[in-house]
Image (cartoon, rainbow, N blue to C red; front, side, top):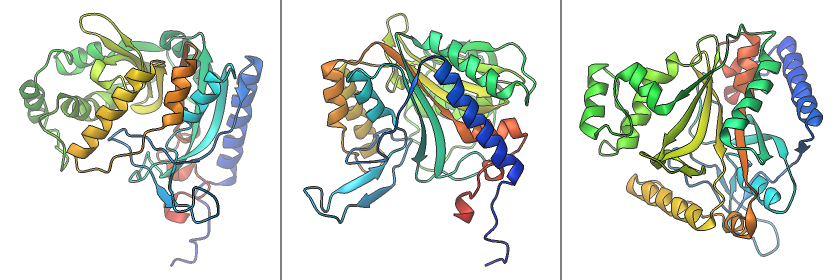
Length: 329
């Protein structure tokens, strides 16, 4: 072990910048009457999204949950929606979250997520507020041109010359071969969404948000996740992702409030996990009960605070803006 292994990854100036950004986040929401909340990091339920992996532990203490498997949250979304259903009004949280299997230049297994929900907003109105906050935090550190909004379809047409809502697996595979996109081991090559994700990651995302905030919005219905569907030809998920200089910063939704449809999506995700050889995740029945009781019409977004701090600091990796990144934890 090196003699310097005890030292932090971020220098004192970066720590002060992080503290300043957090202070400004809290001031931003206080001025808009949005309540800061805290919710548990441990739960008996876990996210079923096959693209995410949760850390698990077993509770050894007293009480009825002795011996139960508990999961560290990948996002505070589910308990925050329970607060919304209970009448909390607009809320935000600065949460430490955990995702297994994610480490690298832009990933750390433990990171800080800024998540907020606005009652009465749809995803388009929330994009306005995300623009306001990101500009407030970044403008003095990063040159920013006028923000851009680009539909998922328009992005694929611009950068790959195809319609993602109509393209076949064969057409998508041909594009990947043409651009020499590496296919990761274990990728389900018979799934349209797998090819779309691959092409988006390698051919589109690096070109998004160059010198400006770029919102990618209106995703295929199959990628709606926890967002509402908007009818049309084709129907689309009312969600967005925010990019700056090729880096994804945020993921937002016009939130699904239908408990029956949400259960169906959880079941579909667990079926996808089974097909990929991944463990099924326990469904959050308390969330479904909250949706059944009545989630107000709202939109929510999760923003990666560490990535935002990295961009504000002009750094190239999360390790440079974390006090103790994974390798030094």
